[in-house]
Image (cartoon, rainbow, N blue to C red; front, side, top):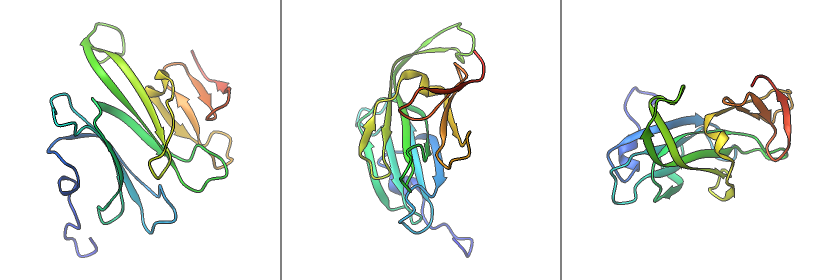
Length: 169
């Protein structure tokens, strides 16, 4: 807070004591004063179904949440749709990780990866392809709508369209 005191704690807002893999503060919903925060929680051992995502306002009040997943391992929030003021939310759920010697795998091969794209109010928009799991966003062409950069393939995409440019392979 402004006086240096804690306004709220994430542990007060989420139904578990655990580990977050995504913490993304941004003005996700411009019609709400202040910034919001997108959180995604990973974890394998939660038998209560408390793996998921949520968006909170500047006071830590939940705007929306989705629970009952396996292991959210990454994601982002970005304005990837034209003619909309709000941002869209991407996260991917991993069903399992197995030991692997594959280059760049950090020692694990991921199995059963499912991508989820929601609008700023939690409505499911699409299930992006698996290669989005290693993605980031940026405004490549300067039009105010972010492109999606796929790290593994070197492609830059507009949502719902073909490759804008191939950087590397």
